[in-house]
Structure formats: structure tokens, C-alpha cells
Image (cartoon, rainbow, N blue to C red; front, side, top):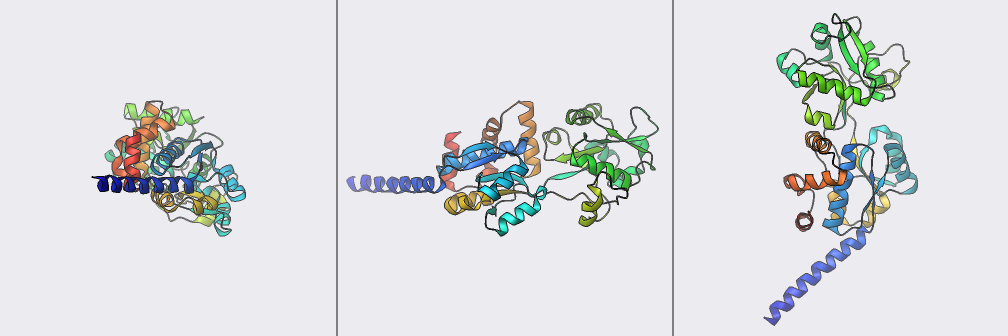
Length: 333
């Protein structure tokens, strides 16, 4: 019995030593929480998993894409950017990696950040012939403008958004005006969301600019129209994204690469188990859309939504962590 007790104590002592070692390696990392829902939730998930599963003392710092990534390259802080839209600052990210200041960990959103023109799923099902922008432009009367029913309406985002500029340029490039469509200014983010919600609740046709992942697409099923043309990155940069460019060409909206960035100094001291987690942790746009819809409906914080996700989706997140960490995280919820 004494031998058994001694052996048990030894095992727990070794496990305790391992936990202390992981905690010492991990330290007190800072995690950037960007100012949109999916990034807010993901940063909260990282904090819970690192702290409860790996003994870290992680804390969240508020950030945004440009200042966060720039600071990570120039100052080595924050330690982790869970949802970095790398294509926003491709040159800065490349420089950070080339100079050994940044590590690109998991692809946070394997589906990528998706932008484009969308129609409700019920419209797509009722009109299976409408799959591309070209197909859409043959059917202006199906998407009547509220002020001029003889014209079709394409709803744009509010002024100041990059997607609004691109939509206006693609409207010109694809000859939408000649095809009988007008471009409608939604006025605001709320106005854009409201136009989709109103159409969906009345089962009316709608087409316009939107993106994924978002809470709205978690609530209302939408189908993105295919461009029907090959992507031309050089032309995209030259004209499709430039508001006053006079001669835009039809083009395909690129999928934005969304990754987890880790400051190199932290990656070197964090320990293999922590980096293994950060290299594995990713989720689909469908999962994120559903979670953000729950977050919006319940007016939940990022932390509340993170706990909800961890409680409801062990089949997803337990694949990211070690078995030992999974048990600790489950016990903490």
C-alpha cells in the first residue's frame, strides 16, 4: 500500500511538474482581440484554452488589423493575433516572416474571408439558372428596385468600405447599368443588414454585397454568385479596388487569407504543446456564422460566446488540444 501511495504521489508530482513547466514556458502572452465578432470570440477561446489547458496567464488586448500586425513586426507585441486578415497587409506580413519576427501558425479560417454578391438561398433554389453575375444580369425584373420596379436593384455597402468601392467598380465592369440594374446605396452597415433581413422575412428577391463569416449569414442562408470570369490579381489591384479608375474589367473577388500570427519570441518560448495548439486551431465559416448568430441573438460577450462554443462543440475543439488539456478545459467550464 505504501509503495502504491508512493507511486501515485510520484506520478502526480511528475504531472504537476509538467504543468508547472508548461506554465513557465508559456508565461503571460497577450492576445489581440480585433473589433469584429469572429475575432473577438476566437481571442476569448484562445485565452480559455491557453490558461485552463496549458497553465498560461494569457490576457487579451484590444487591437485592429493594421496596428496589431505592424506592432508585432516592429515591437514583438502582442504575442498572438488569432484572426489576422493577412491580405490586408501582405508586404508587412512577408517582411515580418522574412526577418524572423513573425510566425504564421494555423489558417484560422480555412474557407477564407469571402466577399462578393449574394442572393437568398430561396431565390437560388427557385432559379437554379442564376449561378453567376452574368446570369443575374439577364434577370433585372426578378430583383425590382423599390423606387423604380422596371429596374433591377443591386444593394451596395455603405460609403467608406473597400467592398463598396469594389462593388461599384464591378457594377461598371459587368455592364450592370446597361443590363437594367441600378446600384443602391444602403447608407450604413445597419441599412445593409436590414435590407437583407426585410427581404428574407418577406421571401422577396435580393442581391447585393456581403461577406462571410458574419452573424447575418448564420441567421439567413445566402448563396454567393460566381463571377463567371477568371481572377486577374494585377487588374484587381490596378482598377477594381480604385474608386476613380475609369475602365474596370470584370474580375473575380479574391478569397482573403485569414491566419493566426504569432510573434517569433513567444513562439520560441511557448513550448511545443502550446504551439501545436496554435498550429491546429481553425474552424469553418459555417461554424463561425452559427456562433456569431447565437452571439448576436443573445447579446453575448466574446467570453460568453467562447464558453458556449466550448460547451457545445467538443467534437471540434478537442482535436486542437492534447487529451490532458482537453480534460482540464472541460473541468473549467
